[in-house]
Length: 224
Ligand code: CA
Image (cartoon, rainbow, N blue to C red):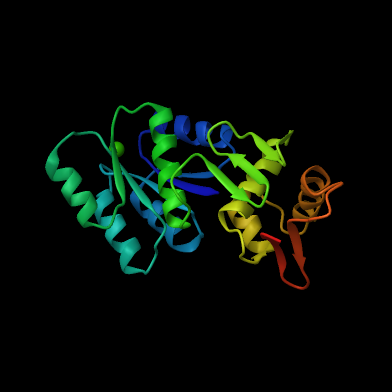
């Protein structure tokens, strides 16, 4: 899943970006409001983390423009003050949640996961399930039929994206844009390579295969 961070405080921005990448998210950082808005409108983010106090534009204004443009990805506001006015203004502008600085990274992660589940109509909880395949979103443990499966981080991120969108066909470009960040090389076959590795780990020796190739389109994970 891919997250945009709009934060002018370099230290906080790079700390959050690094933390999210360590958690398997693709993450991009914008240091001012205009750059943030341009990215938010041009790239298909799964979630936006938005600082309220930006040098060139209020976070609330950015959020309002994002919603006016018809974008529905969840927005979590980061506010330095614990003022009720800020929270109300944030939610009024179309934000889904807010977090007061300073915040614990674990708290931010928990809020992100709530918003991602909600946006994908997944029930509350810490796991995503398709048939007997289950992933734990908190500790990234993957089980199929009760057997633990070890995945590399990018394989996990790919599986998480497929699981959030179970039953939906995902094109290679969607996968590239949601699992990889700006550094992705669109001429490589890296997605097919990762899908094959994932299949070897979760769909081997089992009669019921969950990851389907949709010819000419892409991939999908689905209940058999
Ligand atoms: Ca700020």
